[in-house]
Image (tube, rainbow, N blue to C red):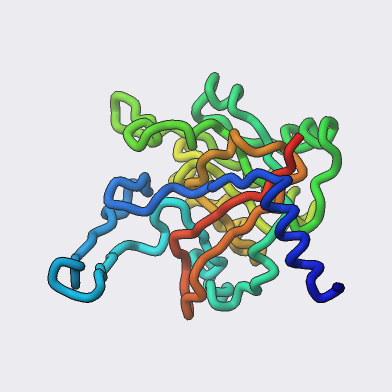
Length: 247
């Protein structure tokens, strides 16, 4: 029956596709930006003394795998409760620059990298989530900041021109990365985090601290980017996962 069509499609998805969890688990050990405190957990009730268990979790919104809303940096920008639910499901494209990032941890994505990717995989579709695959999601928590002898952080980031190109020329819905920042830290403080401001000022959401990106195909997958409907929320830990075709 026609009204059962979606149920049938779901059965096919579960039997014919594979699913990839792109999120870190949320705990006191979760990788997070150097400026934030780790999650704290307080037990309010337990099953030895009560009919139910409950905990209080205290954390900054931008913790672990998380979403940033435009109002994270832009005055008057949309908040999490203003993000439409259809914006949370997107075709997913993964630009693999892991080799370049291994050779140069301060690597910055260029428009040329995007165009080279499109020569192989085709034009990035409108409304896509474009992920910068750097290999950082495979690192353990202590390796992610990649500190030098002076304590400076070194990891890759997006170039401002690449973000502008994706929004203005490809009309993407979102970007994502495995690192804690949109901007490479080598340049972030010098430019006042101009790349992160750029994507949010263009009324897009973004996702940080993704993992398991290497398990997904470069094209053809669908990303589900879920997060609470927080009133005036600037960001929140997100459960991001991908529905991938079996090839």
